Image 1: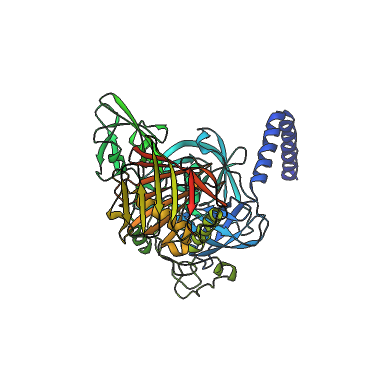
Image 2: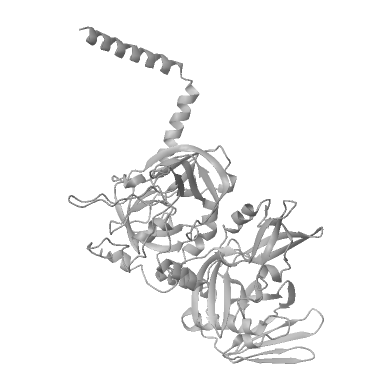
Length: 598
């Protein structure tokens, strides 16, 4: 009886205290709580629970467009192979196919099927994020979200612009966000949202206690701004690479960041950078530490041109440098084929079946990872004796295997999209005879270009230059000091007339900044005659903004910029052609007349 009365009094006392506390809570606190819950509920619909069709693991992801493109980690997508299953908070499961992968940056792009009105996350500007900002992570920790409703962990940004070494893997987390919001195995690939429910990062890496795989409040997310730079490349269906300057940096005795080594064949060397030069800023960001330099460098894809400022003997130099790739294509493919990629957040091993002896496991050091085997043609790594999962019909229609690509289908899709947009502004296919351009020269007189299939003829007031088309276009870089203008013009005409199917090898690179374009340009690469040519198209108009012809990967290209498009025989044609080589302008041609021979 006494115990019963004591228990009853305790209950009454607890209820009374609860009422008193509720009455004393500041309405602003309750309002903030309500707003936080509303933001999380609004952010939840595009979050994915990803599962391998072979039962080899999974993780999380987030949809970023209404047509079903979604982001996740490379180390989540890679074990799944070419396709996967994605559960959404609406309770439905969707088939998805791999689109593109970034092994170094630990990012993958996938495409979901089944609807064209997917809920998607709003991407923020992660450079505006500050230490102390409230953030929350959503995902599928330990693959517990079997109802596809993501869990939520709440915290703050503990650090921004953080650098995490590859630690024996391809994965290099540069300029990433650090948070104390709990991130555990299975959260990989899921979104990190700001307090407004906007996407600022993709969760991927965490530090763990030595005796277990439990979060200790040190997690890292790939910044969404880095992913924005790579998104066009990921849509290309390729295995994309990160950039290198061709130079390393370190502190000197005065704690200045200086060049400690540089490759003589790098573009940075050609632009004047030398050993011992102080790096002042890179891509517009002041450089104060070597890690700070690595942070900025790591957010750019191979092939982009960025601003570099350096100082030598008190004099400042401001140049644009073209970034090379960290890996060669064969090196990158070899590392993937060896299964040398290891995930930073492996999932727990499956529990042993009745009668099976569990494997003994040694305690692992923080951040030590479990190797991931190379995926088979379909599905992902299989446990011995497990049946090979069948590829769904919808995935078969959207997947093509080709060396160097995660999914060639999407490369061909974008290549044709870009070319068709250009051809819609003028069909050049019937114009397989010479093109004749004439106009005034700045120094007086006129020029006349005759661009024919087998030769190019340039007539000037005092001379005439003839250039025959050969199988090795880079063997004669005429006219002198142009870097190969005639070869560039020949490739321009060839792509316009023959199209990507007959040009040679033509593939879609992705997007990159290009002068004169309204937004990042769509870039096609054409390989023909022993040279590489990059064609950059304005995404708004579909017109060719310019091209860069590389006679050699370690040489400056001939750069041709097209502007002042006007009608010429019912086709849009540039009436201003500027030619640059290295850091100099070779010539600017104003076009007065355009004739297409019948």
